[in-house]
Length: 411
Ligand code: HEM
Ligand SMILES: *[C@@H]1O[C@H](CO)[C@@H](O)[C@H](O)[C@H]1NC(C)=O
Image (cartoon, rainbow, N blue to C red; front, side):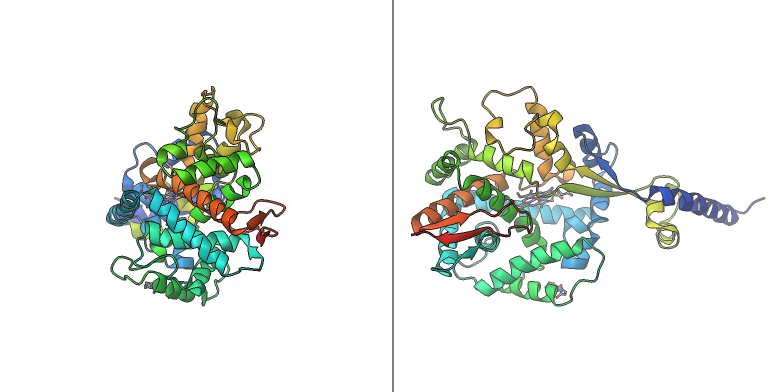
């Protein structure tokens, strides 16, 4: 009779050979570009939370390498998920309790500080938005125990610059300059000295700020030269409420457009997460193998023999002419008219994926767009008061690509 050990050995060798051959072909990434396929990827039938967390954590190991992140984005632990989400939710609840007027006033102060640093010079646009949003997120969301003007300018600049730089570096396999993370850590620690609340500041600052600053930068960039959009932000500045953001105060005679429409349209054309990646483990034959054997496969056969790399093509559905019509590539916040169009269900679903989906959908999804709108409104108000104007560059940027964009003193 064949001994079980021998049988297992034979099975493993045969599987290794088959998978090696298959993996040579399978070394590609599967993109999902329809609403149904994205839903299926983000909420797979029959997968529990531990499996979802593992599928997200595997491709995110690049964030461990670049930032030393230890939060739920890089871990398959349900207890880390539970505690991180609970802590982040508590911060959002506290921010909501302080109210949008408070948040607006913090931003106005932050803008004044940034403008005061350069009373007669030209200010670089992306640095300007990064610094304001970081100050405001630190105080207005994370509840840092200081006021927006107390932070060292040096630390604000280092933290924003290094987060953006490390994010870009995390995307390619080259070694990362070793001074960046210690410098980032040190700046963030001075900005958030409470070690008990923030044991590893990058864990919360990166998810709360990294996407947020770009949504503000893009929304301001699209709105600064259009008086109709300026009016929308003036209304929001005057009455910073969720209802104003949604345009509930608008009557038939008003321009039927809200700050929400503007921010949604900015995020549609420039989604902060263009692709949401997942790395699932093949069920067959690994269901039958212990973890140690799977580790050997990854090491000696190929990672692509064990895992399937997939991503939700969020940008794809946000730009799809099937969902958005022929002007899908144009900035047109009026498209979200008061009368729901035939496609409005699909459009809302597509917009929802900007914040992920399923059990790990962003918990800031309803807070962040309002916060971005309020920050935009305060930026416009303060620029108006101070005599600075925004000069456009040739294209709207993302994490970088803001060459030519600046603020100049016009009076
Ligand atoms: C415009 C700004 C934002 C965008 C576009 C955004 C986007 C996302 C996306 C796409 C995910 C899902 C990631 C995945 O499953 O792979 C996510 C998750 C998450 N986001 Fe956001 N986010 C934003 C702002 C924020 C803010 C301000 C917070 C602050 C508390 C936050 C906290 C979280 C948390 C805790 C999760 C993980 C939820 C879970 O695992 O259950 N996000 N975000
Ligand atoms: C960054 O800070 C965290 C938390 O203080 C620490 O655990 C980690 O070792 C630091 N990493 C580097 C490279 O400085």
